[in-house]
Length: 244
Length: 184
Ligand SMILES: [Fe+3]
Image (cartoon, rainbow over all chains, first blue to last red; front, side):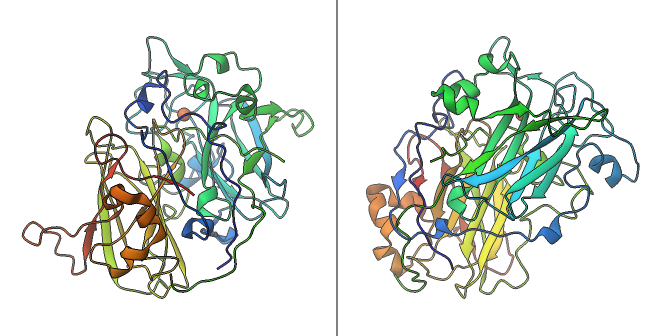
């Protein structure tokens, strides 16, 4: 078991647990301070995934749902590449780590039993995908631009278009779920969930940038979204597996 | 020095991306990641389950819970992932009793859901475990340490009849007997 230390998390940089404008957080936010765990901890190690589990269309949300149903249909909507690099706070690549995504379809509708938005389902869109980062920490998805959607939070509250991301890293304590937004979306400034973040620079870090260089002429635009996981601290612990 | 990417809530539809088959999206992946104990995990089978409550004592039915632990021998890591059931809110893992590595035997949990802006880390310890006395996390939890210790159901009420031990671990996000969450 490889043991190391991680840099202390900057909780002021993350959205605040209690963000009253985001109504769902009011009853789901702890009120007691988090308990600091010092030294060696089980959470400094974590699961590893084999690239063998990833199917050839897992990263392709335009085709993977229809293909699973035995058809070669494609999802409706603006075709986009979403790609980037997963690194740690020391700017070291995080290779071979699992990246999972989920999103609404181009009309802003999720394929989910609790979803009630009037926008129609797309028979060729499931909304989930995954891939592993390569040796340089790079990942890449092919999907359709998700639509904005309303949610029951206030009288007229909307989510900007976004893609949900889940990333593992190499330690359970690095585990991260976040959302990527799209450069230029005017709804970003109105989002109660994004506004739970105090620092405007932190909000900027969640905005995928239009990347003309990676776009494919006559095929699809591209957005770039780099992800930073917690980095190693300066004092790795001795490797002591046994005992207390 | 870069800054960690800020967290955002997993939202109410986390199942689509993390456990698609549970949300009815079949066939893209062969199975939901983390849905089954690895075949080579060593140790005594146990079932760990419970409910998550919000500050109003209402059951949270749209959460995702991930587990990370050592197996019974202590040399293999186990990672599992389960929802709180969309209809009754119960989460449940069939796993093994972890070895005592880095403290008393424990299981690490990570909880995400709509309304949780940053995933919550906590730990499950076991009742009647002598090593609990000297576990650093339980010790520093002080008066709130009991929120980290699972319970055995009353044998009279235990109808599970699965042939291996059941441990109950409820999680309270807020308010009275709020679970200890970790900054790790
Ligand atoms: Fe969403």
